[in-house]
Image 1 (cartoon, helix red, strand yellow):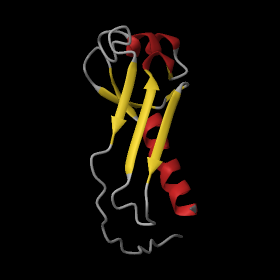
Image 2 (image 1 turned 45 degrees about the vertical axis):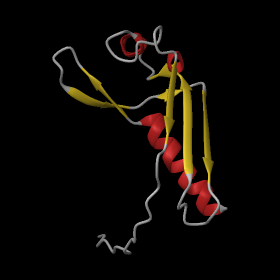
Image 3 (image 1 turned 180 degrees about the horizontal axis):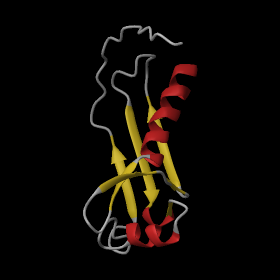
Length: 108
């Protein structure tokens, strides 16, 4: 159960707080933000998440980056077009199990 919670938190954090925003010159920049209204469900029958499903939905108009001007632009037809597409949805199609190797990093 602990593994499920940690993985769930990591996936939700990625979905909520990582997206690209383009400037008028079409240069991409990293922007942190979140959706104030969302729901997320992770369903699995085993500890390794093989066959798990991830469902996420958000009210597109609830997006916030703590910058009112940028938020207005993101909600416009140039990006999310919240009037035409009020709900964002994501549903996973597969989960692939991969082996991982422990990694040691030298720290001084």
